[in-house]
Image (cartoon, rainbow, N blue to C red):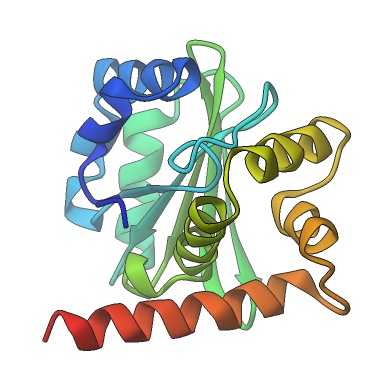
Length: 185
């Protein structure tokens, strides 16, 4: 499994991963969010990003107002900046969006450690499936994404998942994370 806590793996990845690394470092995004344990999640780290994909950065905050002020202070002048507080899955969530050098960025913060957030768990499950299923499966995921499917529904179609692919992949990912945690103890 890739160590997603250190973005240097992006430097030697695909073209879109290298571009993401450059944008993240030039704009000092991880550095500016450092006290919120930022973690790049979504399609870029697992190399299934397509042209419209964004940089999804998960953050863990303990004091929501401080987090919102910090994000707005650091990124409020970027094109398309917007920040909002919503409830997602019954959890207080802060989402900020902006554009850095033409790349859409989404900062997603919750009062939950980043490695316990659903987006991270989905990514872990998807990375494992991509490794297991191989290059053709990866190409087919990207093809469906280019056709407009979101990531989890694309996986659901290719895996023949009946029902909700979000919850199925989340359950699979939770098992993987729990197994990983047991193996590291």
